[in-house]
Length: 150
Image (cartoon, rainbow, N blue to C red; front, side, top):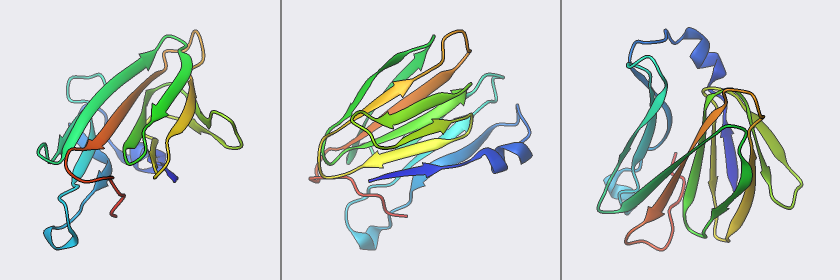
C-alpha cells in the first residue's frame, strides 16, 4: 500500500526560515495497541531544509538515507516496515520497480509506502538538478509490522 501526501499547497503559505512544519505523522493512541507514533517534520530554521524525526524509540527503529546528484537506483522495503520518501529540493520520480505506477515528487511532497510483502521501488533524480530526497525507513522493534494509523 502506498500514499502520496501533497504538501505543496501548505508549502505555499509556509514562510521559509521560520522553523518546522509536520509533513507526515502516524498519531496512534495508547488504547489502539502498540505505540506506533512517529512524526516527520521539515526544519528549515538553518536556511536549508532538513528533517526532524520523532518516534517511540522502544518500538520503532529509524534509518535515514539522502539521495542527490542525479541518483537513480532501487529502494527496497521489507514486509512490515514503512518507507517515507520526502522531496527536499528539486524533483524526483518514485515508481514501482516493475510498474505500473510512478509519481513525481516536488519539495514538500511525501510518499509513504507500507505493506505485508517486500517491495522494490525505483528512485530517479534528474542529473544537473539540485534535487535532494530523504528516505526514512521505519521498522518495528517488537511488533510484526508497522501500520498506518491516521
